[in-house]
Each structure stands twice: as structure tokens, then as C-alpha cells.
Image (cartoon, rainbow, N blue to C red; front, side, top):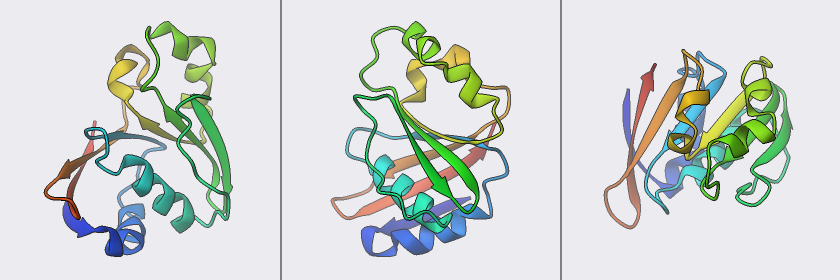
Length: 136
């Protein structure tokens, strides 16, 4: 699936994406500033959460409660070694059955499960993004 959208459409895009989230581990890929956290905020809201979503850049993981269950939001941008993910119990989160939304997953490739969904976000211009959803 591929969607081209602007920030004005983000809530509608999140609602549409929910139907494609057939796995609980979702990897968000894109350059810095592509809108990964913004899309995650919209998805968490679409899943019925009223929690405030922010990037867990320093904490590495933020939990949110939603109508769909617990959502764990990871941001591995700052880690220097893959083992840092192991130190916070990343594998336990992945196999908990809870939702795991992961930014900068390319920094922890050996920990990713066999099956997950990747959402690639491409910057088209200052206001427009293209996302592609793939099942791995």
C-alpha cells in the first residue's frame, strides 16, 4: 500500500493504516524530520488513546494506553550499541503481544522479530509525504 498525504490529512491516514496493521511490531523508517513521530501520534490517537505522545529519544521507550491495548513507542536514534536495546528488555516488549512502534529500528536489526510491518516515510516536499507499508 502507498499513500501520499499532507499533515492536514494525518488523522485520516492513521485511520486508514489501522486496517493494514496485521502484526503488533511496526517499524517506522524515514530520514530525520520525515514525520515518524507525528504519524505515531496520529496512530496512537486513532487507536483510542488520550495519552500525550512524545518521542522517547532519551528514555528509549514510552508506554501509552489505548482501546487496542498497551502501545510501546521506541526511539533508538541515540543508542550507540545494539546491546543497549537488550539492556532495557527490548526483546521482552517485542514478544509481549503488545503493540511496539519502533523508530530507528535499523540500529537494532538483530532483535527484530521474523514478522513485522515496516512503514517507510519519504519526504516529497516541506508539506507532503509518501508512505509505503510492507509486511516482513
